[in-house]
Amino acid sequence: MATIASPVEINSEVADFLKRPRKMFIGGAWVEAASGKTFDTYNPATGEVLAKVCEGDHVDIDRAVKAARKAFEEGPWPDMVPAERARLLWKLAELIDEHKEELAELETLDNGKPLLFSRIVDVPTAAANFRYMSGWATKIEGSTIPISMPRAKYFAYTLREPIGVAGQIIPWNFPLIMASLKLGPALAAGCTVVLKPAEQTPLTALRLGELIQEAGFPDGVVNIVPGFGETAGAALAAHPDVDKVAFTGSTEVGRLIVTAAAGNLKKVSLELGGKSPNIVFADADLDCAIPGSANAIFFNQGQICAAGSRLFVHKSIFDKVVAGVAEASKKFQIGPGIDPATTLGPLVSQEQLERVCGYLDSGIKDGAKAAIGGRKIAGSGYFVEPTVLVDVRPEMKVVREEIFGPVVTAIPFSDPNEIVKSANDTHYGLASAVWTRDVSTAHKVAAKIRAGTVWVNCYNIFDAALPFGGYRQSGWGRECGREGIELYTETKAVCAQL
Image 1 (cartoon, one colour):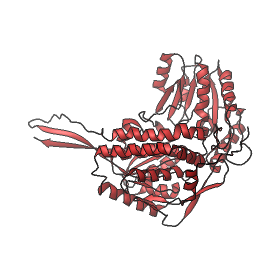
Image 2 (cartoon, rainbow, N blue to C red):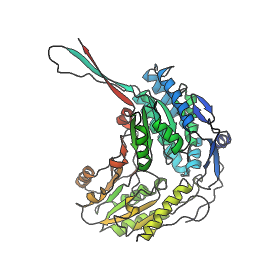
Image 3 (cartoon, helix red, strand yellow):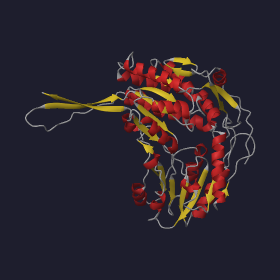
Image 4 (cartoon, rainbow, N blue to C red):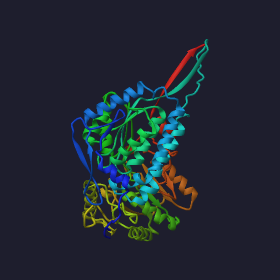
């Protein structure tokens, strides 16, 4: 497997965007970092510098929080009727659609993912998320409560109110989608936001800021401060005037977010790591289960928190499924994401490449064998072969720890009654899947797996209406759907004696 040269010329709008100074968005204005510092963002397909971006730190975060607080308490935002918030979110979705090709190319250049998927997954999903949440703006409601106090009559009811200023920290694997998942519900609820994109992939968030401005959101409602996690991210999580922090990323950083948020006991929601079990029973439809299992781990180069990275297969079909997944991996066209023919791109960074290769080395050293793959691809860029590891044991790091790359461990099982125990043998609990023709087996196993999502005869099916989040060390709270809106509201009880 070798990378392919890309003769593709990028969109003129993208070229113009990359040439302009990439400033931060605070209080409705595009400003430089207070320190004057910038950092480089890299093209994962080549390792070359893609753009220079202003580097925010605690001073810039403080400026942004003050702008968000002012917008929350003063000006047009707090008095805006829900239908108007809905209109602005819908307008933003329309602008994403209008600039879909530009956003897709920008996402691919910054993240490395295939342009094919940026076009059909990332950009349309971001627009759909904003559209879905626009509908919620007019449907956030309380309830009347009958109470049982004797000798008097009372009228009691609840209000759902915006929580205030939200600090949002998003990862690099789905930059535009993650921005929409965070911004949509917060804005629909009436909050104001300070968004910190990942330092590896800030570009579509900054372009989104321009579209937010064009849509007509009031100044300070959305503020975008690129920077590093240990500076800008830590300052946002700890800021005493932030009412809620939402984070998507690794479990290790999630723990740091919780500690930082303790100062003012701000509300916290976390969508963290996973080591998701993907279970193929003996009666599964292999024409679906084999490509589905390949998609479960190799989609987005395996850089997805819900990736089906532990493949459990009944021993009677184990060799056939492993061979099928290995064969599916051979069909990927590996190359720069900007080439429309590419179906598997590079990892996001040199750091991520070293992490994944380190796990591959560890697995082989511990006795695992690569049924296919197992190596870095020679040449420029951050490419690694899609890999299936067999002969693994439960205590191996490749089985227990999140790799976040195109690496799956394949494990045979014989007792259907014991497979749930093996599937739950992890401190994560984000996602899982069951492949079987037996509807009873499917629902019995789904009920016993401790994970926030269980897919049956499918994988990686997401929707703006479908709650997503994890058990155990995979996080707190649920994004999307009604629960996603509720993350950004407070409940107030009102009781009046009549």
